[in-house]
Length: 127
Image (tube, rainbow, N blue to C red; front, side, top):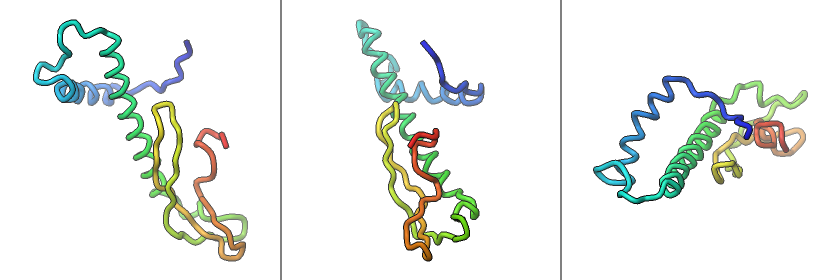
């Protein structure tokens, strides 16, 4: 099986380790573990649900914050300069489930059309 996941730094791994005890207690109570006899498959389903929710929230927030950090030259479209006109909600289906985030929206006054400086697609060159 191919593993195309990004390698995490030790700092990130340490922070996850520090948080996981609190999450286990929230899920399983003070003991921090499921009751005796809980199958590993059930533990795995719960862990995957936690990971997918973390992934969804991480992606949505990262995409939204990235949109707020748009450079001024991103509004250039040929010889025309787009004017910012707010944001638009984008929806994506990811491996972890659906996400929504706000992305900048602009308007080209001469061309009289909408302009989305982040471009179309999923960020991986797919449209």
